[in-house]
Image (cartoon, rainbow, N blue to C red; front, side):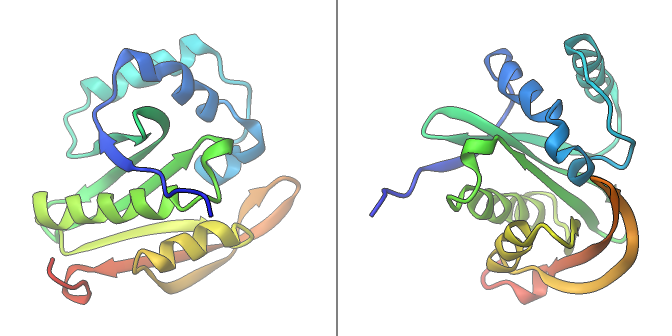
Length: 175
């Protein structure tokens, strides 16, 4: 049986940028991570996007997903509503980090950060309906399906449903 990797969330460093750029420019999963139309992403565009995010004054928070000391993805809380105390969660992983429980471990830590450190009461997310692995990982982390936007996304040549999921602090044990 393979050993379970040690997954943690941490701040981004310059050493992580190559991995994060490779994930961001992956056209194979673009529609699952972006609301905009797929297109090639240059390193200059990626760096400019990071600079804009760094200059932003919103309450978003981003982490690197780290496995045994190596960056394998990113996780963030964004669209934070500080009055109603909720935020949207997002996660992206390198291809070789998928299907190993890393996403589940990372999303659990992200939700815990939101509830304990940011005093959120609800975290929600969206998933492409055909991404069964992601939906399963979110359910393992405690998210429940709250709804569906029918044929809401254009993904690789077809319309797909968006599955809306959420988790409440009051539904988690000890948080």
